[in-house]
Length: 255
Length: 255
Image (cartoon, rainbow over all chains, first blue to last red; front, side, top):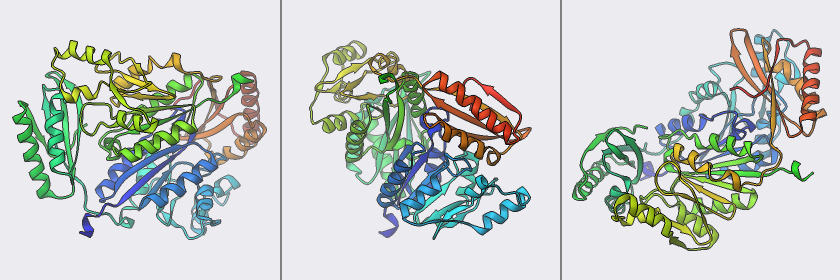
């Protein structure tokens, strides 16, 4: 079925501040959840510094390999903000000053738009704007690439103007069995047997420690509600047969 | 000078749970800070799912391109934990059950070490163990690749057994000028001029919003204390000449 086809995305995080450890990235997680809700699987992410060759090369690899690419960071006014230049280079097109952005800046800065700020008005030929409902200039889309801000609140605001542009597949649903008082090593065999019997589902184990000792959340992911229900029943039966009790069903995943 | 030579590292984060958005990664940031303190620059990071081909290919690209590679995740007992297999495949070697890990498990699990848990005792031929001071089996090193746990507290514990194995360059130092009440667009020109005059230093701008309105932290990074002092003086002079005041010096960076 076409609706079951996997649609994929990648994220490219651009910025020395992530690699130096100065800044804890949260954009990857926000984009992962956002695309997931639109039936798009985040399949890979990369973090590169403010280095033109590396950015251009990562853009070209990722936009060809996946259905969508989201970049974050590097679209401010300072000399180390080179994302727009890199995207244009990757696509082999020029940048131009978008008149709407210049008009917006003139309104905000009172006609005094200096060269540094004008850098933020540059978009590649053939690109379209991505609204920025928070503050500052918009992002842009060219082909299957969305170029977004690095500041998390602004990046998330920009996502609001992207959902309608995505053609997703069936949304991934997930169910979680939470088990307390048993180690992952006890669950591994029944989990693997169930996973083998349901090759369309993806199953993972995420251990934790609680007052009851070791435990794990066994997460089943898939796109078909009926097959999901069967997989959950099979997994619970396999766990019970292996002597595992204290199984709680969670509708959604919990960290 | 040899001590000024750049030593680089990459991080490979392995796990569907990061890409699905279930889990917010914090290991990248912890490793970035850790290697930075040892004079090693984190130059790239990638996140891939639990897919053998993608893991093997990323390991081989990154271990050849950088001086060190750190992987996190995928070393538990369940069927989706395939990192050890992938590392062995990338290096073209076999896995064997390490007798010390088996002994440790027998002590802990009372001789009842099932097949799933034995998976966690497998290390590649030619590898050495990385101590796990928190709980569970150790990680391992093979060549320039360190294979660490995905659970953040365990991963950070394992880093304690790695510092002495790294041959770092000169440690990067950084100074920050914090400016309140001016936009990045006002600072861009003096910042760029100073960056051009100090090609050995890296300079970046990280904007924020406060009670005083727009502001930014201008961060200078480098490896030479004398050149750093000169760059700080030059940047402050350039900012002042551009009419920017409210400049605070911070010894270290603040988020």
